[in-house]
Amino acid sequence: MTKATVERELNADVVPNADIVIVGGGSAGALLAARLSEDPTRRVLLIEAGEEANDPDIRNPAAWPALQGRSYDWDYRTEPQTGTAGRVHRWARGRLIGGSSCLHAMGYMRGHPADFQAWVDATGDPRWSWDELQPAFQAIEDHPLGGNGLYGKGGPMPVYLPTDEVSPVARAFIEAGASLGLPRLEGHNSGQMIGLTPNSLNIRDGRRVTVADAWLTPAVRSRANLAILTGSRVRRLTLAGNRVHCLEIVGRQGGPEEVFADQVVLCAGALESPALLMRSGIGPHNMLDAAGVGCLIDVPDIGRNLQDHLLGAGNLYAARKPVPPSRLQHSESMAYMRAGDFAATGQPEIVVGCGIAPIVSECFEAPAAGTAYSLLFGITHPTSRGSLRISGPELGDRLIIDPAYLQTERDRNLFRQALEAAREIGHRDELAEWRERELLPGGLNGEAEIDNFIAQAVITHHHPCGTCRMGKDTDAVVDANLRLKALDNLFIVDASIMPSLTAGPIHAAVLAIAETFARRMDTGG
Image (cartoon, rainbow, N blue to C red; front, side):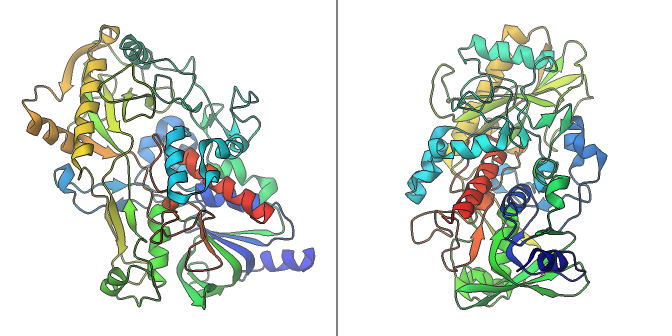
């Protein structure tokens, strides 16, 4: 096909066909659209349900929490959670080009090497190890210490290490943790996560950098072989034999339209990727029957293995003097550690974070900004596993999201220890200059009261994953190459394929997954 033909098709008013269709313009999808369209002979179509990221508040790091609930947030609701006092949790997910990279708290943490060893164990493929993923991480990053063999330099995504902007409260928090034996780190991305450091952030010149900013630059968008279709959703996939024959989309022209592609890559995230498969008749037979969808391919594990990080919000302190507003994004430092031993090394089990603002769940009344601060607390590798399913065959039918929070005794025990660690740090002398008194939780008598407080305090850390997990076992949804095992030309490249959570925010890992997939496509692997 000539370049003129490609340009004519991709610039036409009708929805174009393509060699590769990417469903979802979030973090993985935006990166892949840029990377896969580097080959001018490859026609790439990116389909996104939302629009462009035009809200100026998105670029303001301090505006981060206020972005949730706006028109470009999917704003999902979970089922009531018995482990969190029967509460329904709101899950913010980005519905726009750039996806949740436009909404999240901008933290960039690769994870711990042991996190990725779990992926190797699940898949039997060493390409998912910490060492083998290093070229992907380095290609992503523009790190101030890059070029040293560990961090990347000159990549599309800035990794900013705050210095002068760090809040004096966060500095005192770091001193308090160090006094208990936690080491000081230069960031969370060296492979050693246990310790104290200001959070590494995807910020440049004081502004949030989204994945769309980093990868979908004007030069990339002008490529004749790349088309970006916004305001459109894929209703279902049509199958022919063991392949996706076409995609039925709605939105741009009002009615359903068909798109044909040689290969389809789902990047719609841990909720919408499995939901699209289910609407297409691919998933657990019993769940599809209940939703009124005929089962074409019975894949029992689609929608299962749902995982998410929780944070206790929070261990709240009244301030002795006015707390200056954060010059970053409110949650300025995360301290990872083993439970019960501040001096222990290895893979983290719990985390304590310093919130410059008075961050609490909806169960508690937050004091006025500047009068209090919070220490957040959580666990890094929850063993509770939830599920996602569709309630009906149409796009407007709600998703039934059950994260099954705090359903294992291990998770509840580690959360108790995380709260204890937060309070121990919070009462250290190094924070005495700022601490007037502890407001929450106050006196707790016995395990039941501790658990009740935790159940009311926890909020999502916004890291859903695992619903289309990769693995070598027969029940795994995708193989180590991220191909849906039941079909020849369908791949899933987003957080849904993660067998298990990384220790911290998962965004860096999602970018590495996408970059790794792009490299395999480039080499024909």
